[in-house]
Length: 178
Image (tube, rainbow, N blue to C red; front, side):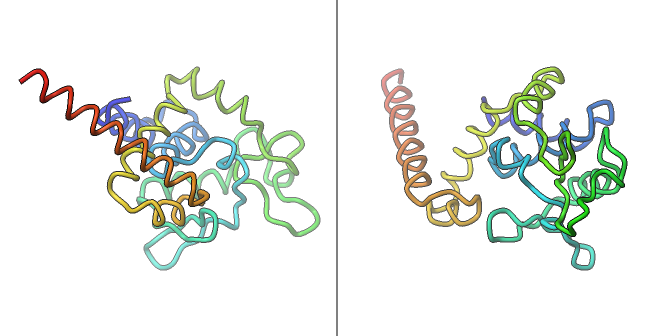
C-alpha cells in the first residue's frame, strides 16, 4: 500500500463518523503503530490512561502517546462498548475488561470478525500494517521499533533487512531507467 493511501486511511478512521467505532480505532492503531489485529483485540481497558491533556495506550510495556482524536475514540469505546451493556463488559473478578469485548464479554472479540468488519468497511488490514511497519523501520532503528511495537528484536531486524532490500531494489530500478 502506498504511504499516501495509508495516510488517507488513517484520516478516514479518525474523522469518518459513518464507520463503526471499533473499525475506526482498529484501523487507526494498525495504521499508526503497525499493530496486528490479534494483538489489538487483546488490549484491555486499563492499557489506556490520561495524564492531563495527554492520553496514552500501553503497547507491550511502553505507554505510547495517542493523537487526541484517537484518544477520544478510545474513551468512547470504553464508555460504551458496541454491542454490550456496561454491566456485561466489566468482569466480576475485578480484572480489566477488554477494549473490544467478545461474546462472552470475558473474552476478546475474535480477530476473524474484526477482519470481516474491516473488509466490509473498505479498510485494509495487513496491507496497512505492512506499510506502517515499513515506514517505522525506515525511520527508527530496529531495536526502537522492537521496544515500541512489542516485537521480538529478531523480527524487527528482519523487517529492517526487508526495508533495506526493498529500497536498494527500487533505487537500482530507478537508476536503470535514467
